[in-house]
Length: 447
Ligand SMILES: [Zn+2]
Image 1 (cartoon, helix red, strand yellow):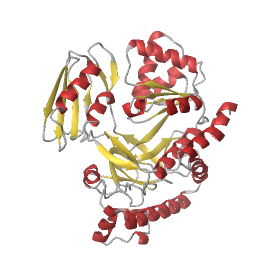
Image 2 (tube, rainbow, N blue to C red; image 1 turned 180 degrees about the vertical axis):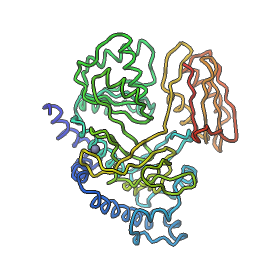
Image 3 (tube, rainbow, N blue to C red; image 1 turned 90 degrees about the horizontal axis):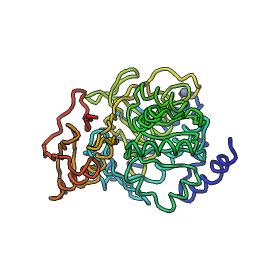
Image 4 (cartoon, rainbow, N blue to C red; image 1 turned 135 degrees about the vertical axis):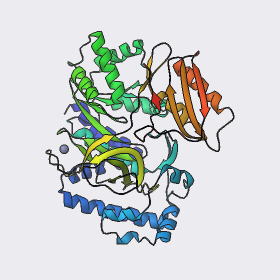
């Protein structure tokens, strides 16, 4: 390990985490031990953590206190994770209707989050420090599976305006120390792409991190320009947030001369699964119970596709118990050849987001439009259909709190990104029509 990386990983990052009151370092060490435990020992550990979470919720979280009382559910008595099936699902409407009652009565220092989610329905929820520490530690563990570490030079291609707005003084220095450089994923004009490639060549990162679509886009551009990227020493490209297609994996891998590691999770559900170098997606089973359910809500065995339902075991401050993610996945049945006991997610579908194209031909990530809608109050659900470069339709289900100038804000926000002269039609509807697959496809791109 390079000297500087070692300094960051062993000293600077731990100090940073302590400063933020996260006990990430001790957690990561523990998680690195747990990952090698045999399946039965891991299952017992998971069950004990589940019992602790449910008992805490029964005592300190008004929503669960009332729910358990109504159901006659005794949290202390659960004998296996299958007992979770006696509880109803936590859905986005349930969270919306019970946001205050879902908070732990002793919770302190909660962060408020707002996510679009894959269904296009905005959601407000809270995250406590315990949950943050566990997610950071889980990500850190998975990073180290690939022979890289926090502190190695990294290029991050990301685009949440929230993240970008946080580029304050502290974050600036933190990123400098951790040797992380951010490239805005929503600005993908030819000129920007040329700059991105130059930056990557200059930085010579050991790892890349970003949306698969964005990294593929940069890779294709480098290919088109005939710029070689295989000589930089990039070891791995971490991708997340979207479905990873085989051709994207191949393109990123060939152009950057590195392996591609897929990750699955979100602000809402947490750090749920990550690929290991042997090619399997390992569930963060020490931190989450993952169930796969069919349309009727019945739990499915390994090998059968269904919706991914997550109980995150570190969410005491704002419990996510049987949270319906809206994503489709399949549990694996066989252990991984790498020897880790963490069970497998055999396949993960869903979360497909396309690019949209501005009037001048600039290709942007679809999320750049979604964020405009997500941040408006009173937006219950939406679907964006880019009919052509000149016309974009926004189907919108309103709820209380939608301002009279909401539509005007959408139109001006979209025009800022797509071009001043494009037509943006905002159409108010009662329900978003589902796609054939049963999932929403909120962007249809006509590049
Ligand atoms: Zn493995």
